[in-house]
Image (cartoon, rainbow, N blue to C red; front, side):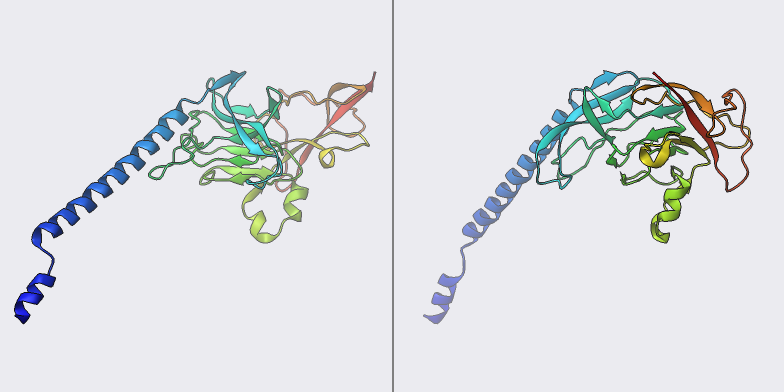
Length: 269
């Protein structure tokens, strides 16, 4: 009698098989559902409304005004996701469509469990990028096809989060900013050797207008004209008194560990 009771307590083979089959079916349904939702997220994101503005291809996305990522008011911002042609140098605008440009590159699939995709900027000829303090993030893989890029941080601060912008690509800052950094932070940056100065008493951006870095016998690229309320811009000069106008068709002689400065000349309207 005891043996019979033990046998009755053991699960019957058919029940075990049904249980295993049920677990397998449920697991398959869950995995398939997740995979389908992931694919939908990827392909719907790839179909973002990519617009064109001058040399830039971009998308409009949302961000928080307080930079917390979870609070504050949401607003529309711009992400640069490609260029319209082959460029060696590019200046990232502060605004497009009156919306702030905050990203270079952007994550395509925002809710993908299996593979994160990013827009890739396909411009292998690119050598220099000029950016300002409006840029928050340079996204991962944005410049996988471009190596040896010099990124010029033209603001007298550099709080850009660089995800994947590394390797042979380098970020340049003003000497004064570099020297104010702690050792660990400074290790990530290089010092640019050309500084364009605003050259007026009501200084903006610490007196700086634009940063550049040139090699021996390389010409300096002429920047876009600066603007100042009530004044007309008259050119770039080699001294604050604006006596000698700079000729952008020649190469400067810059000693090692020094900065070559050009000063804006203004005429009151």
